[in-house]
Structure formats: C-alpha cells, structure tokens
Image (cartoon, rainbow, N blue to C red):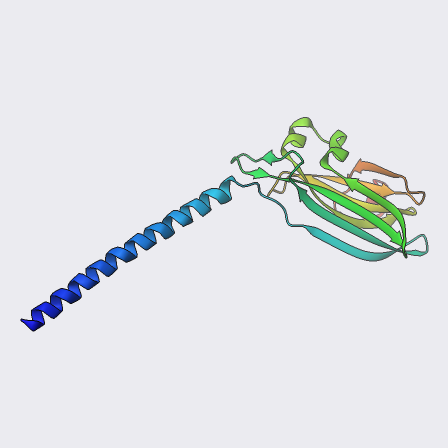
Length: 186
C-alpha cells in the first residue's frame, strides 16, 4: 500500500509540475509573438556611421569627416512590403589642422532635383564616401537608394578650394577602367 501511495504522489507531483511548465511556456510564447510583432512595426534605421581620413589637397594635408545618422523627424519611406525606414542626414566636415574649411549638412532633399519624383518618394539618403581629387577639387560620391536594395542614384559632390560646391549625377561607373577612350567621357 505504501508503494501505491508513493507512486500516486509521484504522479500527482509530475502532473502539477507539467501543468505549471506549460503555463510558463505559454507566457514565453506570448512574449515572443509580441516581440516579433513589434519588430515588424518599428521604423528600420541604418547604423550610425562615422569615417575620417587624411588626404592631400592642393599640396596641403586635409582631414575629412563623414557622419551619417538616422533622423526620426525626417519623412520616412516604405518599401513594397510595407516596412518603414527612417531617412538619414549626412554631415561632411573638412579641416586643415584645427581650421574648419568646409562644413555642410546634406539631406535627401539636397539631391531632389537629380531624381524622379517617384524614386525620391521611396528612397533614402544612404551614404557618402571620398572619391578622388580631380582638377584641384575634392570629389565625394553620394548614393540615394531604395532601402535594402541595389537600386540607387549615384551622385558626385565637387568641392572647390574656395569652399563652394556643386552636385551632379555621377555618370562614370566605378568598374570602368580609364583608358584613352574613356578619359574623354569624364
């Protein structure tokens, strides 16, 4: 009889323990579902980016700093699946020693005239990188793109020694090797 009582107590204990575990996993499942739902509905943001390097410009050392930040106050865009993305702002600073010789904040709207309205409405300012020194000017490549895609508009910012700058579509592909025939295209 003692054996039966011990077995019955063990089974009851196991039954109560199993029911308790199910309740906890149910709560964990709800937490997982909530977290998954929240991550889909939040605005996606690119990582902050800061890059600095030293170059020589017209015989003088220059340090440039490119900083990119996602900004909640700018208009966001949605892709075909409904995922929402924050737009970015890019700060470009040029210094000779401690002297700031150029500083400008760029938004997607800075490049609006270089793209069609539909592309502009669905794209974000993705990035900027130093390209080259050409004819005594600094050239920075800029891309405005559909989020999480290869579709982008390549742009070029040319900064002149007097601090003025101009923006143009970058018509020369990066993978084209400059030869006598392609040098005239630039």
